[in-house]
Image (cartoon, rainbow, N blue to C red):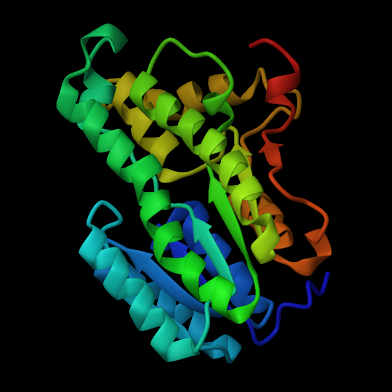
Length: 266
C-alpha cells in the first residue's frame, strides 16, 4: 500500500536493530527521509548503508535517549538536515541487567531508574524536542512503541512492564494535549516478536544451552492463538500506517499487535 508519505521526514529511536531498524527501513521504502538514532553508532551506519540505495536521505545520529543534551542535539541535527520532522517514532527500549537476574520484589533502585530513563523518559525527551518543530510546521505524527505487557499482568520483568504501562498512559495524555496542534499521538503494543530480546531471554532461561534455546522459544510461541512469534515487519507495518495520513482519524489509540495473545489467558 502506498501510504502517501513520500518526501516526509522521520526520526526513529532504537533504529540500529530489531523493530526499530525495520520501522526505519519500511519508512524509507515509502519515500521518507529517516534520522536513525541509537547508542550503537556502528550498527547505525550499517542501517544507513542499507537504506541509502532506496533514494532517500538516511542520517545516522548516535543518541542516548537517557541524556537530554544528546536528544536535543540529535533532533536539532535532523531538523537542520531535513528542514522538518513530520514523524517521530519513540521505539528505544531496554531492560536492566537486574531485571533478568532478580526476583521482582528485589529489584534495586538502579534497575528501576534505568528502565524509566530509557522506556519512558526517553520518549518524553524526544517528544519534548520534536513537538515545537511540529507545531511550527503545522502538525505531525508521533508513534510510541510500548508492549502488551504494559496492560497485561506478568510476575516478572516488572520494571520493564511498569514503564511500558506508563508509556501507554503518556501516549493517551499527550494525544489529548496535542490534538489541537494537529499532532496525532498513538501507541503500538507488540506481543511476542522474534527479536534479540527474546533470543537473550532464551539464552538466560536455558542457562546458555543452545540446544534448549530453540525448544524454549517454540514453547513460548505455541500457546499463542496464531501459533508463532510475530515478525518485526508485522510491527513496522502498523507503525508506518499510524504515522501516515491514512490513519488521520486515529488519535490516542493503543494498538495491540500480538497474534491474539491479549484476547485469551495464557
